[in-house]
Length: 353
Image (cartoon, rainbow, N blue to C red; front, side, top):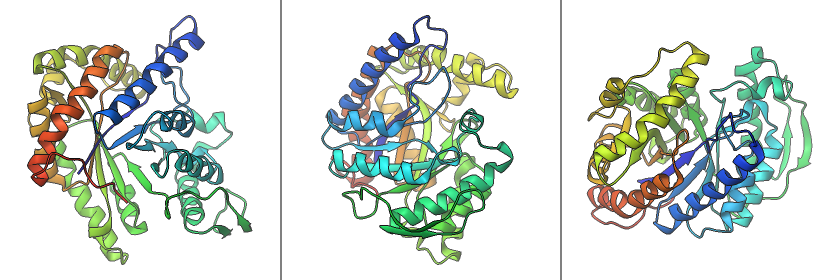
């Protein structure tokens, strides 16, 4: 199983100098990706957003900067908001990243849980589902064919025999679909034969297991071999030298983010009691010392049979030194424990296709 990280590169939305704030966060972010590579983690993902509280609006650009500082770690969006982007440009950007990184690029396409990009780029939210379906179809066509003829869309103009360049170093640029827990999205990914990444940000994680069963059944019914399709769970969590330190360091920044989003979406405020419950044995938060987090990752793998596990540790305004220590412990302590338990060896995983 591959082990990795993802982040939205949170910044202070009230910073008086947003340029200076962004420059410092970018410097820190590149150091975090570089450390993740050095300690032997398998994947690092960046999420696309168009809000004042998140730094990265162009994951491929930042990942290209990280590519020249790293050697082995795979570099992916987490996610690219495909519905409000142009599939040709998305492919070109990640194919370019693939060339810069010597074949380590991946794409993770999603609808996006925030909607700011739709009015920003002139899209109608009423077309939310259709935009994603059409653009995913086009992105798959571009990935699979150098010269593209695509006439399937109503919201995007057709392409008649046009080449899309550059082509990636990898024969087939990996393309994942990110889902938030709706059965329709999971089943669609299975029917299309695409790897799926499931975000688990609330509730006990075992309750999401039926979605992977649905995914594999949908794949089988569409003629795709479920054994060849990769799955990932993407979670929130944090690792520190002791479980008490991990919980105390993570609670404040994570609660601030969840409360801010909650005010936008009508959720109630979080509490330390809720947080502590969520970091229990079957809770959605993977927070603790290396041994506890490793045990929980292994337990989740027994439930899901997932090929990849990504944890979002840098949530909110986490101090950079705490994030770096968490990454160090993840790579040097947690990952070897998980790998040894699952494979009998502490060495890294085979990359997902």
